[in-house]
Length: 264
Image (tube, rainbow, N blue to C red; front, side, top):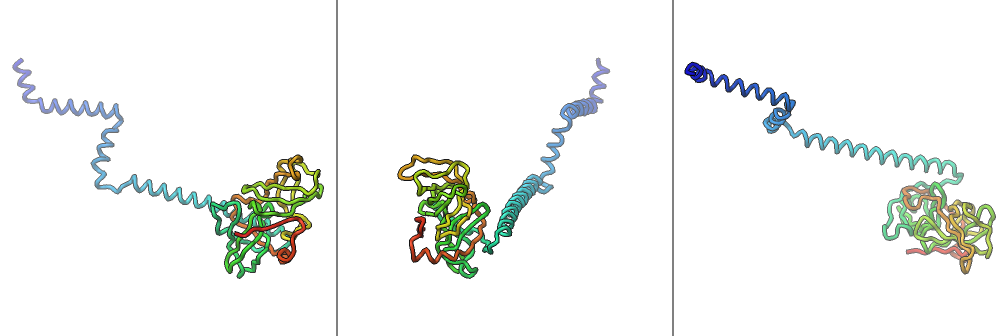
């Protein structure tokens, strides 16, 4: 016993250190060094740059570039579609961006980025891929104000392409308009194509407007049809302005198909 005590007094420090080392080795093996790594990170952090912040900034920048690329691809697709539409149209038009639109009058009017200095005149026709958008009702040197077909005050003469029955359309503050027929029993059905009337003085004849979505022949005082506009009025960003030679006539005589316009 005395001998063991003397051995312990002489070797206890080495024994304790060896036990601690053995225990630490077993602990590190069980935890796969996670505690040691975290301790190292904590001690070394004051001497290293903020890697987390740098990584977050790089990720944010990467996301921004991706979003910009997506937006540019979308704009490029729209411009390609518009270019194809302009090249297919025999008349020369003025391509223009939409530069202004009020949330309170989203379906009534918009502002285009071309004006008198670009050759735009009051009464010009505004179109987009799909068909008619509206017509210019006022012009400044650099901009043009457009009355949309979807404006409730808008009245445009229209024709059923298949049967040639006529009427006029009025806006509903949406991408749908109502067509009221002159005949009591018009030949119209769902899916019919609607174009501008040959009697129109505000629009040239035969311009595409939309397709018949539903028909109500019992509507009083005249049969009606709901027309879905084919031009993307709700999200329009680009358009084409075409001159209309007959627009000056509409100021001196009432139109035959009861069209009207309303300026703000």
